[in-house]
Image (tube, rainbow, N blue to C red; front, side, top):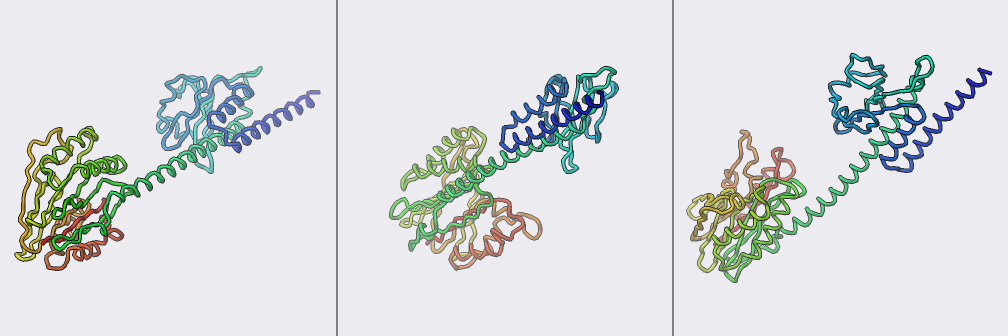
Amino acid sequence: MEDKKGSKDRLKLSRFKLDSLLDITLSINANLPTEVLLSKYESILRNNLGIGKILIFKRSAQWECLLNGGFPKYFESLDVEKRLLGFDEITYVSSDMGFEGVDIIVPVYNNNVQLAFLFIGDIEEEGEGMSPVIKHLNFIQTISSIIIVAVENIRLHKESLRQEAFKKELELAARMQKMLIPDNSHMPRDPSIVVNGFYFPHYEVGGDYYDCIRLSDTKIGLCIADVSGKGISAAILMSNFQATLRALLTADIDLVFLVNKLNSVVVSNAAGEKFITFFIARYDSNTKVLEYINAAHNPPVLYDTQTGRVTHINASCVGIGMLDEIPSVSKTDILINGYNKLVCYTDGLSELKGDDGKDIGTGVIIQHISNREPVEKNIREMIKQLGIPDTNPWLFDDVSIIAADLW
C-alpha cells in the first residue's frame, strides 16, 4: 500500500511539475506581460511548494530586484556584486552569513551565464524537519531560469522597439534639420558675391547651422552658428534660432539690435542650459561694405587676394544665450576692395588634429585660399585633403563651412 501511495505521490508530483512548466511555457509563448509571468511563478512556489518568502535579484544593465514576496524592503538594496557573486551553487544559509530570514540561496544560470539569485525563506517543514522544498530545488532552479530568461527577453524586445522608434525619430529629425541648411543651388551667384556651403554632420542631428539670405537687390546676409552640446535638444534650439533669425533679419535692421533680440529669445528658450556661438554678416554690393558681429564664434578668415593680407574676424561679444543681457555688442564694417575670400566654419573643422597632434586651427584654411582660385574650389580641395567626412580619424564633430567670394 505504501509503495502504491508513494507511486501515486510521485506521479502527482511529476504531473504538477510538467503542468507548471507547460503553463509557464504557454504563457511565455502567448507574450503575456512580465507581471503576469511573475505572478504565475510566485503562485507555483508559494501555493504549491509552500515557500513563504521569495526574492529575485536579476542581472540586466545592472543588478536589480525583480520580485520581492515577503522579505523586508531593505533587502532590495543589497549589494549583489559584493555579497552574492561568490555563490556558484545552491547554498543553505546559516545564521552567521548575515542573510536574516533567508533559508536557501539559488543561483540561476543560462548557458553557463549567471542571470539571477533567488532567495527562499520561511519554508514549510514535514514531520522530521525535512522541507519538501529541498526535494524540488532542481525544479525550482529550472523554472526560475525559464522565467528569468523570458523576462529578460521581454525587456530586450521592448528596448529594441524603443531604440527602433528613437532611430526613426532621429532619421526624421536629421531630414528636417538638413532642410534648414540652404542648398548651394539657392545661394547667391552674383557678379559681386558667390556663396557656397559645406555641411558634413557627424551625428544624426546636431547644433551646427549656416544660412545665406538675399535681403534686397544689393544686400546679402550670411551667418554661421553652433549650439553648445549635441543631440536633439541642440537641434531643436537651433531650428528655433533659425526661424527667429529669418523672421528678424532684413536689409535695414541694426545688427546690434538683432543680436540682442536673438539673445533674449535663446535665454528664454534654453533657460541657461545652452548657448550659441554666432557670426552674422551683411554685405552691400553697392557700397562694398561688409558689416558683421562675431558673438564668440570661431574667427572667420578674410583673405585679400590683391595684398595677400589675412584677417581673422575675432569675437566682439559673448555668445548668444550666455548671459541674460549682453554687456556690450560692437558691429564692425570692412570695405571690400577688389577680390576677397571669406571663410566661416565651426569648431568641428578647426579642432581636427594635425600630424603633430594639435588642433589645425585656421592654418589649413589660409594655406588653401591663398590664391586667386574660387573659394569653392579651395574648400573642396581642403576637405579632400583632410579626409572629410570618411577617412579622418579625428572627426568627432559636425563640420560646417560657409564661404564667399566677394568683389
